Structures are given as structure tokens and as C-alpha cells.
Length: 91
Image (tube, rainbow, N blue to C red; front, side, top):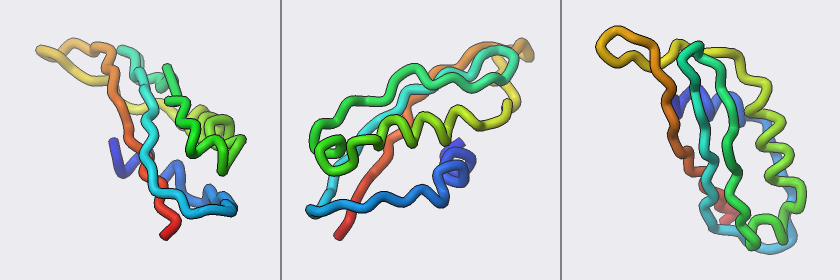
């Protein structure tokens, strides 16, 4: 999944005035049909001070993802919730 989301984030570029070294988190839900939904993009004030539209751009990029195979529990499709860290380092 990390490679899948990493590929989706390729090409996003941001310009900052100050060095930035921080991590923010995005919570996802993949339902039993394989549809991906963003539940929450963590509000990180240090990142938002440098990149005011960071959450919007990341959400838009990830909302365009296609469906994936759902998680299986004993052969039955189930929903899966997970958290993805995004590390921003301008050094």
C-alpha cells in the first residue's frame, strides 16, 4: 500500500520559504468493495504555515485513486482502516 500511495503522490511539488522537517498523517478507509476514502488529514500547523494548501492538494491527489482489492478475513471482504505517514524534509 505504501508504494501505491507513494506513486499517487509523485509529482506533487511545494515551494517553502523556511526549512521544513516534519511528519503528518493521513487516515484512510478501504471498504469491503475496495473503495478508498480519506477519513482525516492531520492538521499540522508547522506544515500549514509553510504550505497553506498542503491538506487540500494531498486530499485531491489521493481522492483520485482507483479502487483496490479489499482486505480479506477468512475469505470474506472486510473494511480496513490505516494511517499513512507523510514525511516532509526540505534539507
